[in-house]
Length: 441
Image (cartoon, rainbow, N blue to C red; front, side):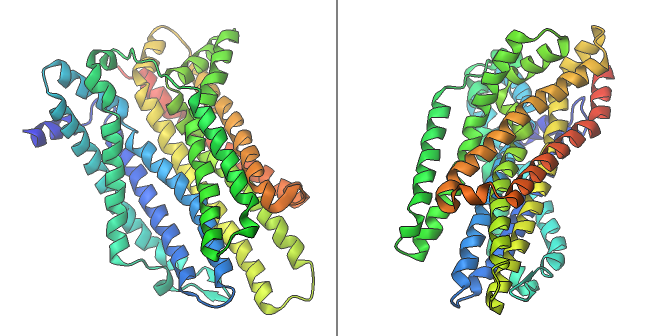
């Protein structure tokens, strides 16, 4: 019975196959990038000479800088069709379905979509392996054997993605089970406590402390653990603090708005600060990474200019540049995918609103202007704020001198500009989709 209802529930509605294709695409992207990152890093742990620890520590930093945002993107993918699913599940609750039935339907739908996307993602990883094998480290390519993951990992990652989707589905059911009528009529007002900011501040202070004692850590494993905890913890709390910050800013913008587009943009953010954060979270993570990349290149540049370097040191500096470049490229792939999928999903979630505004006579230019402002205004805040937090965390390790190096500042500015440009291009590319949603009958 549950399987039959789940099949009917998964059938595309007025939005067509897009409501199914978007989460599958997102899960496929997450799986491909995650397997690629793990495959590229695993070869570093096969080395055992004196300099191997340096490569392993840098690999841990790169993994944290990429895996944490990928996990965040995976969580967002699990919620892409949440509004459509919540509406239909709430309708079933109003028709008499039990909470257990609703929970089972939500978990089945999300898990199946995640598994399909993860399988596609594994195929994408195998397509990338030949290119990844050509990446040079320590004077020679990594090779297919170095980057090809074993079957346990290839099975565990898709299962982990499916588990993430199932957990997200269960967590998202609380409102449906408690108040199905409120969900169906969209009367749920998001509540974000100031405790989010307090927790974020505590984590940043702890990360600053860990980086301060890094030089006196007792062992190599302790250093790696401190690096992972500092960068991973700070990146994780960005997702906690971000929605609270942009809600606070949007409240002020709504009070001061004197134009329809500005008011609609502020109200769009206030309707769901978490959804607004997902639109810009990829750039926030990239901004954090930009500081690390800029400082790393500045250190490498000064080190390479020192002269009298042996072959091993020259290879290390060259490999650090390669690693930073790969991290930046991986981050931008994540941002581009996140932006495209989330913006398309945002239009699908609000298609009824856009259709109503079109029937009331609102010009498409005004709707698109409000959509752009609802994305670009939080984007500026989160991009700059994330870069500042990253600089604070790295300050004990590098000092202010490396952070304000011209090369570091240039890299940071270039990455921020590129990230904002990717979002702007995403808005431009999805404008035809907004037109179709507004004009649908």
